[in-house]
Length: 205
View 1 (cartoon, rainbow, N blue to C red):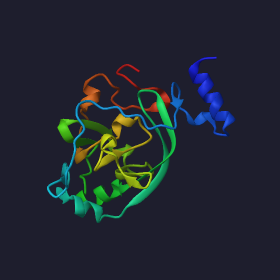
View 2: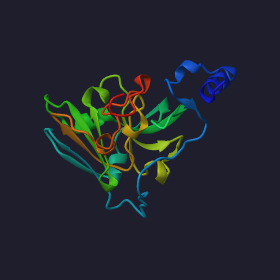
View 3: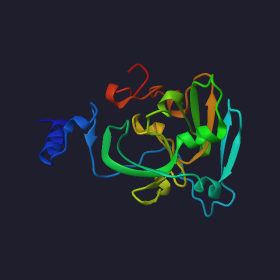
């Protein structure tokens, strides 16, 4: 029996439905770290800001304290990394993307957003994947505690139904766009969409 089959059997023995695992994934209780480059360290957030811009009626710049004044939302859900691990029943707190929509009022021809993060990292998503019934947050807490620096402190985009690189760490802005363009990882070989259930890990998958 291979590793993935043993992992699914272990889940069943623990009373957890192994069908919660997308194909090619294994379950872990850990929270592995994967990123490129340095981890930004903030001594304080007095000069930190968050920008909402692009194809919108009202471009908005928020300080960290202004961001924290927005209505918060807590969700519990599974997450899936392109490097094949999945973690179940994770708890995240942040600001619903609907609050971003309310503030900026994107124009009707918007089709995609681009997440802009520290060091120039970006991630693109279709607008329908961050609106409606989809879970999409500007997350600042994991498990009732502030995000650890290596997991995106002070702010991380959170969209758990896609592979986790789409949940961009160290978020500094959201750009609304009327056309799609690949972000950093998508420009370097990762799939443009990244559906775990269809194993869309790389271009051509």
